Image (cartoon, rainbow, N blue to C red; front, top):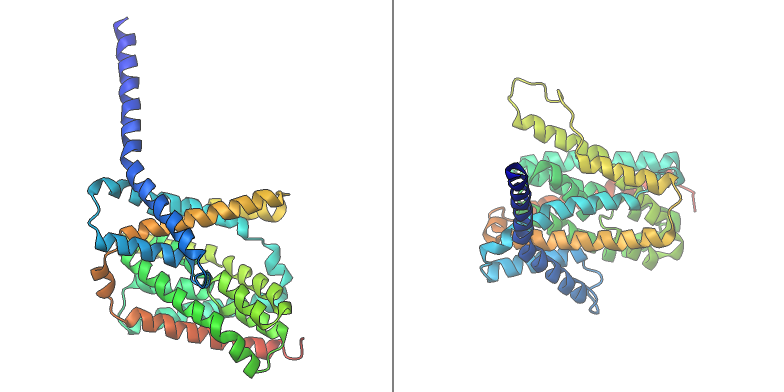
Length: 352
């Protein structure tokens, strides 16, 4: 009888411990969700749709964090949103990836995508090192510019563990140049007399954010939009090898220098689940309503995670990096725009 009472007491203690941990994260989660709701409200205002909703969320978080000294009770929940919810958002992002997209753009498109992404990543890494920036910040900007903007930055950060300040700076700079691309590409395309096919390829291969790709291509020519969207989504496939590579390098750098750099290639669990979601989306019948619901949920979770990340970011830490990351993102953007345009003009000549 005594032993039974002891077991019951033990279970009650564990339950109390579980609920205590849950209660600790609730205030920060509520704050992050509330800030996300306000983000959606701002993003719905006229003229705000061209600004990345993730950028708005992280900017609001930074503003609140630096204007008001948040009580410590919010911190556990904020960290939970910035880390755990972020990884959940990356997993669900897999439903936006369809391996058939890579096939639809053909061998030519696959080749241009690979050359553009790899050359941009290498160039950004080289230039960032020359500018004396820290490696994690360089990797974030390189991934964001060469692959898919905010999504690539946050997925990369999940394995290299950069500071929230570096992540916020990377998202801000990459978003700025993605907006510039959206505004300038139709003008440049018209001046160069690009065909709808050429412009669709060019914008899809080089503009960072999907929303800006779609906006630029529709503004140029309705025929460009479908090709631009497919080309852009095909770049997301490269998120997997980049994340695995950078995660392995980060792990290797934390080990003793005597070990081989690639002695243990680690694949983060959320990347495996991301791939699983992509396989399901590609090869299994999924209702359109379910895909739409998951896409909306994924967008909301990303906004929550960005708001939380902003709530952990201090102005002083961002300012300590100076303008060099901004220069790096700008030159990297010019590089990917130039390289992709040259490749598209060279290999799609005569294709309308």
